[in-house]
Length: 204
Image (cartoon, rainbow, N blue to C red; front, side, top):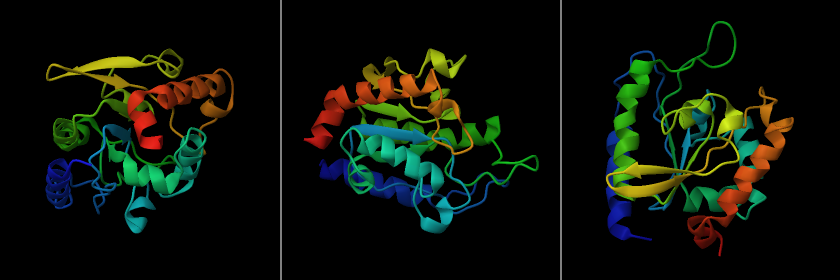
């Protein structure tokens, strides 16, 4: 592990946790471990339980997500220790009166994007795994999930090429990843991740 990068990430997270720029977002800021990883996972936003437990994907969706990653070599504990976990927005957006969690608006996404931009600059990841449509949209145009799940893409960032392998959101409210073609495309994405050199280094 690069100690210099890890120190920078620790300082970055300390600053991030003080952020209160979005009045409609509900703190605390939720972050993953300050690990200097070449694999970066980007979620959408914390749910109402993540702030209580102080970590991303701490509830039902996390159980499904970590089952996926366990199938390709990293259980939850190992994943949290070896993969940097970020998100589009870092505070709970609150509940939608019509049901489910509120989707962050464009201004909240824009204000929070500087944290993710800095993490990409500090970590210089070789593989980004965006989880869910909102996260995927930060890196590419998304028409339908079937057009991006099961595929690997390249992103240019400051002259560096980064591989991007999207995953669907593991929400229990979604049936997309449990039905065809979603189930098959999810398996293809996990297979691509398992074959990526950066993932292989984490699991070997």
